[in-house]
Length: 250
Image (cartoon, rainbow, N blue to C red):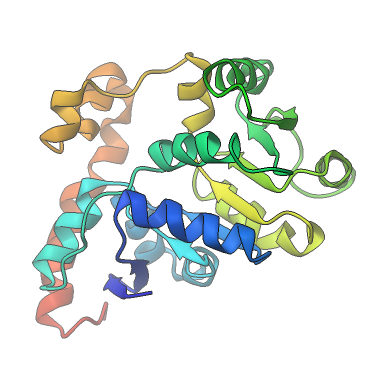
């Protein structure tokens, strides 16, 4: 696949539909796939903490879930085809799994009962979808509790797991535990998608998404995000500096 470097992370240059086709192709071929969906905030987190690079960069498929990453790629003269939102890919993959014989989905993350609600809503929307199991995100990510969750996933027989623990916690969890789940074909880090599927949170209206202002809608809904949003101008300024330095951070 064609890779585009954005601040030291190699993004796959795919459309939404191409991403879905890639995931299904790897699923049918029996290849284990880690799907990560960084936005500008996560890329900036890697810049600020380089120990995150090998974790985020370990993804088999890395897609730009944020207009900021797409704009940065354009600044660098290596444009990406489009933004590929994790929540969209997750829903399209769920719809495709409903048509795939012998495949099932495990939902991991969210507050108690959220994953259950998401599972119910997804199976109502896609009647052929098999939900292998669910578990909330409130467990210790190491030690006995984590081992119990891993065993639950293994026993479920799930071929796909949506890991919705928030970034970078979900990427760290997949990086640390994918080898312990050899029969899982796709491990997708999808952030707050489980809340969207459950209906406990909503995506921005289409006009905000079309104008690349989904981040602004979230800020209006959650003003406390202002501190995190300040990473956006830092990211854009750093991208111009990165370009002038010949695609080097320092």
